[in-house]
Image 1 (cartoon, chains in turn yellow, blue):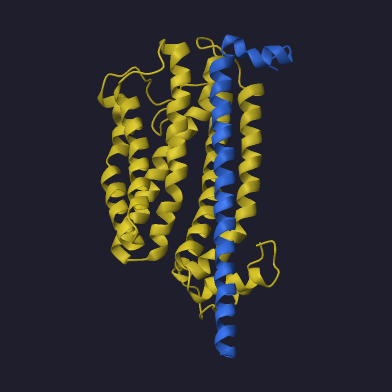
Image 2 (cartoon, helix red, strand yellow):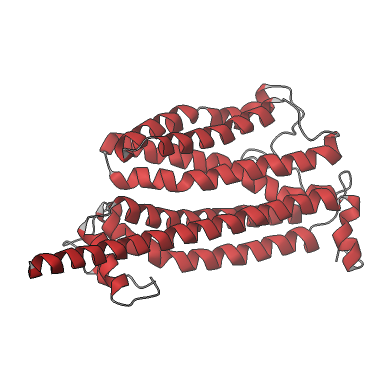
Length: 265
Length: 65
């Protein structure tokens, strides 16, 4: 993926500006350059996390090996909440500053966030059966996570249903921002209500309630999930930038490069 | 080392279905998302190239007329 013709579209203005990369034509090549390092980090962390999780972390005294679902379940649940907050943040930035790239960022994050929410629910069900005796209960933690999954789906469906991208962005932003209230509800649900779901295994105020190798494996997998999410969102935001910026000079130059036999494009 | 043999590893102490069911679905979804997002990117680039080609043909025709 050679984007060299693009970097020439606008010479850097004198001095560094925080907003230099806030426009699609400057962010596009930057995002492209960040991709490979991100994938390499994601793969390395996944290998390290899985190795720690399966070969170093011991079998749990009470749950046996069923607990090994934690290495996916907790990172997925964390990511589903973090991605939603980041999405809502970009929507708010877009509404306040009217920047087109912010809305593209939030649309690029939504499918991956929905995937994490689904994985958290799926692995939770498969973990619930051997430990609680049931795949599903309508308990506060599970229900609020399900609502999070529906919020992601609602955001994507609404955006897809409105033809005018500007109106679609604004309508989607409303769901994203109002729905953000659900994230602290998910997080504190195990404290506020009496639930079947266990409390937080890791918190900032207490020492973790698990073996340190288990914790290491989980944190490695969480970092891997971060890197993966950043990578996949960068690819998607690049695609969205081209889709939405058709008929602009920078996309035309990109098309020219592809036409000129740059078959890698 | 946790596992005496490969079969012990796959059995996951009797929880194989739950553990591997979790990992398999996650791997499948991640793979599917990567394929879809790569396709979307390819389609976007192809669209941009097509736009340029069409513009060129139009300009050619106008030039001849």
